[in-house]
Image 1 (cartoon, rainbow, N blue to C red):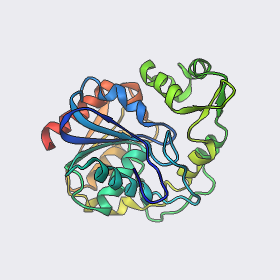
Image 2 (cartoon, rainbow, N blue to C red):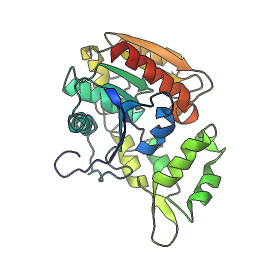
Image 3 (cartoon, helix red, strand yellow):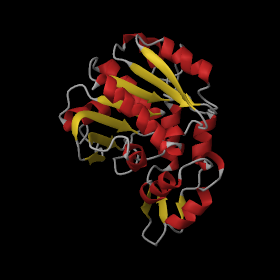
Length: 273
């Protein structure tokens, strides 16, 4: 699945009814959605994709254009055979859904956007040097085993509040075997850094008013990137959007409270499906 020359990996959960497309955040993988799907979305037709440069999908080319993420989403919808599914995404995955709807209006019946990477402008620019890219390039890429990676992450830094089920899936699927018994990141630090360089370039902020489907803009009550006033400003730019703040969560709400995010998507499906 994917555009010419770009392979996209996907996981489809058996089910029926209106389709639900799930798109993960930068640096992660499709399997992190599994605790979100169970139990709230169990029985529905759900497709989770690995963004290019992540998981089992093919690598990106530099310089990287975020609009290609939107094109990948459109390819995923077409491959699933859906007409007007519900889209749910986190961070860059949420932005990918926005870009897809802008590229092909009417693709989605509704969108659940968890802290989308859509920031004010203009100006819009490619950030060659930025703190997120620098942090990605310093990221430890290899561990002697999945258990060693899990112990390194649990309770620390951005992983401090993660549900253990999600963290286990990250170390099992967000890494690949290194051939010597260890594991290394499936999204290498240089690929992750390239994602961040292009995050402020796509310019979707100025076009949010073109999106006519209903939207839920969600964020963590303790987020350091999307505080409630900013979520409300984002939502105000859509034609039809509401804000939901998830208590006790940070930017990583789907990883910290997967059931709550699953219920939020399920509520949207009931209204739009």
